[in-house]
Amino acid sequence: MNNKQYVKIIKITIVILILLLLFYLFMHRTPKQITALPAPIVVVQKPTSVKLGNYITQTGNTIAYNAVNLVARVEGYLQQIEFQDGSFVKKGQGLFVIEPEPYLDKVKEAEAVLAAQKANYDYASAEYARQKQMYRENATSLKNVEKWSAKTDEAKAGIAKAQASLNIAQINYSYTHVLAPFDGRIGRHLVDIGNLVGHGEATKLATIEQIDPIYVYINLNELDLIKLRKAARARGINASKINTIPVYVAMQSDTDFPYKGQLDFVNTSLNASTGTMQFRAIIPNKSFGLVPGLFVKIRIPVAEPTQHLTVPDTAIQYDQIGAYVLVVGKNNYVLIKRVVLGPLENGRQAITKGIGAYDQIVINGLQNAVPGQQVTPKLEATM
Image (cartoon, rainbow, N blue to C red; front, top):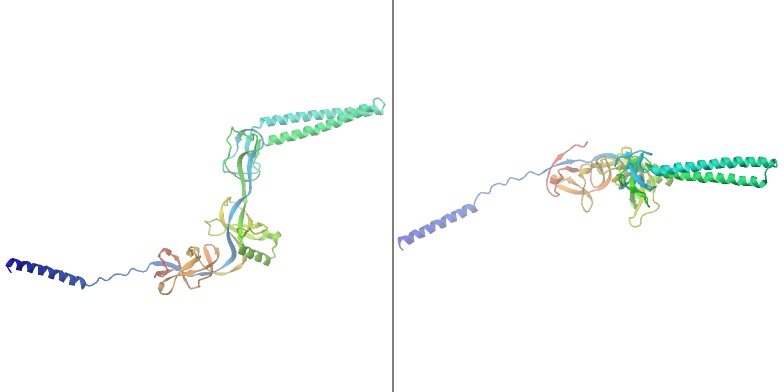
């Protein structure tokens, strides 16, 4: 073995020893201690016992108390629009003017015809009276008396005909001024000034709606219907006294039910396709806060107030199975508890089944509360 081979073997041996040393050090290294992340914080609250009413809670739709399509009932050119689109108008307020001059002339013509017929009647009746007097004095014939009697009757009929023509002319003239039939909100005008309206058909000019009061239509399912009928019987309410049953209404953004009215109509039978019966409530709406077409929440009291465990309504979660809450249980692990909901009032949701008075309900930080994982609960006192 020459020196070059010997040096080469030494170098390879040294490299192998270094690699073995590095491998040994890697395999016997001291592992770094991993720092555990703290459990996420959630805000919890214990249920509060509150006396709440027992209600049927459903949804409904608002409908105008009165709705009228204003149409042109006479032919002519639209001359004036006397309101602002979308404004509130008073009963009797002028809204449209349709070329009144020709119809005013018709009124004057009918008045003249009526005056002429009255003059004819006055002359005929005077002559008839004179002929009767002359007949008593043997100064005229019975034929003349009968002739003027007929002329008097004819003139009297002429007055009636002329009066009818005048009435029609006055009615047609009144149609040239379209007035608000009731207090309400009017939509936009549908025909511009200068257009011919009422030619061959009634031209729609605008729509006006009365929204104080306003109707709310409700469809109650069979179970709710049974509850309501049971409550009505307990209070001695029959069909003729349905307007004594109160109804509370809220918009979707409301946390309470600020509108109060009463039922005023119940349909005669269940709808076979939906299994519901239609009810209607009439709601005072002086602030005009409710408008037609809204999807609203309604509730109807069916029993005296009773104690309920309540939680903030924001704590209620939903999935395909139904309603549930997240609860911090033993060792701060998050649990799911299925619940049965009762009435909702002032942002507090009553729970009739599923939780206990000492459960810690997650009310904030829900995104951190994963079922089966630990959390750090922060108790918030109830208001």
